[in-house]
Image (cartoon, rainbow, N blue to C red; front, side, top):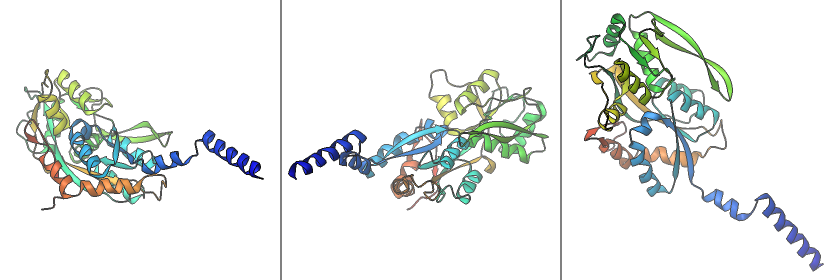
Length: 305
């Protein structure tokens, strides 16, 4: 009888070892405190996450794996359940993400601004304007080169919002993208003159700024990436900020945990801890005090005195 029991015990132990189903593996899963976050390239490239994430890990023991891409693609990551939380900047798309049940709540974490950069020669004559709509109209009227990201990012979304409010004739263009692992179509709006003076390149902010400098054209950029390229590289950036300070150029960032009702596997408990920490006095203070070359870059939206 003892031999039978011993044989059965050995069989069970061997089964768990072969399948990897042992208490050590389960314990590792329970203690593994890592979440995945899709965010924008501008958030990553600003250097802010290099300050925030180590402090968050020190306070909570939670590690965050960052996946940087355009806002549209980051939101699709959340819709597909590929990540636990998203950190993006396209407020209307973020609200719809929550309304459609993909996110639990949008946390208004911070904001900064977009600027319109262009060559010193300023052929469109927009220097000193603090009105994004008028600046875009003057660029279109003069048919000056304008480089668009054209990548469904937060910056591209903002650009389309501004064009839509101008008096410039617009065109709808349908492109194919991959959504939920399948080909899908999405519609972009752009002014007349695509491929002539208006160039849509489907690239990130860095590549867009580089091309704008090479062609001495205009572009819409977040301030942080512009400063990084202008002052943070030996070669600098041969573009100037020509239009800024308009309310239409405000750039709001939202943090949204992915809804476990849609994707039960997401680590909502850890994602919620990150959201709460970002909205805390410490998180907001780190955002407020973050600077690039002595210049503040983000302004916290949940400051607690």
